[in-house]
Image (cartoon, rainbow, N blue to C red):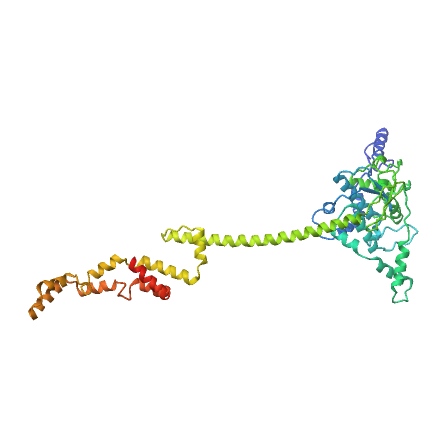
Length: 484
């Protein structure tokens, strides 16, 4: 403003002074295209960390995928420093607890940016170039356990938390210390592990943040080495959102501006939390004891709750398998009944087209289904013969009209009336019988239509077509044909 680089067209000094006062009163950094793209350079490795923590392909945004696995823990806590947590007196709502946990996950990634990725901070003047420290498998395990403690039950995080990278790191350490030694004993490896586990984290109830103003080039982009070391001490939500009383652009001011733009504002009044501080190492997968300063309440043992939940989970899985098996059986029966229903409908349509009265009932269908194949064929043949064969009255009528078979034929009566008169008489009798009797063609036609004599009758052809049903079938056939 003093160099007239901004608002250069404003010449009134009083107006420029008022504009400067308004700019200074803005409680955040004024963004620009340069600061926007430089900030993306800082956020890119943080996003890569969370993507790897999710383990699978990102379906939506990182925030949506992470919050999908959130289940509020029994006690909602806020990390105040390394190893120190503040516990809410009254648990907040689920959405507020999820936002709070998600912001703490980002803060952890920001504190250990160079240990979780191959990322290196910017070089400080008059100092050596920073070396690559990550990715550190032990630090990744701590991140996974920290996410689980916050309530993010991510499957990939559970796998990372169950791994044991410490032994390999101990071997790597021994190889660097003793480069001429090829193999190390299990006792040496355990000694390194035990020595590292005995190191205690210094508990800090309050963190003193630097009030030094940062230069313009340090306010955005990839952090410098000294700023990253300051972030390891300071980058906790209660410290970020605390009112420092400083009016300058400090590192805390820059980090608060970044977190406010992404997560919004958080407030941590003292009356919201217990006055004491809970000590719990985030790298401990299932701490058996939680120490509260100046608090004599009974400690909780979450492994007992986990055991009960595992038993319930196993029981639920068994019930699920049984229900799935029963469901598959019911689906198979349903498909079978559908096929049977379609078959019955098709048969009913065919019967309707053929002009036969067909009323499918359960008893009839079940009876036909239960009959063997031979019995069903015999029943079908008998039905066809009964339909196509002449009745008893028709056969008797044909036999009565046949002079060769009926003694009551008119030709025989005439012979009895006139008697036998020798050759002339025989000639007259033959003439009368020729006149009154049916002709040769008529007799042949009647014999061909008689099912008892003609082998070419349609009933015999049907029998040849559908097969012979044996002696019992013949007997039934003769009885049915005579009785009609």
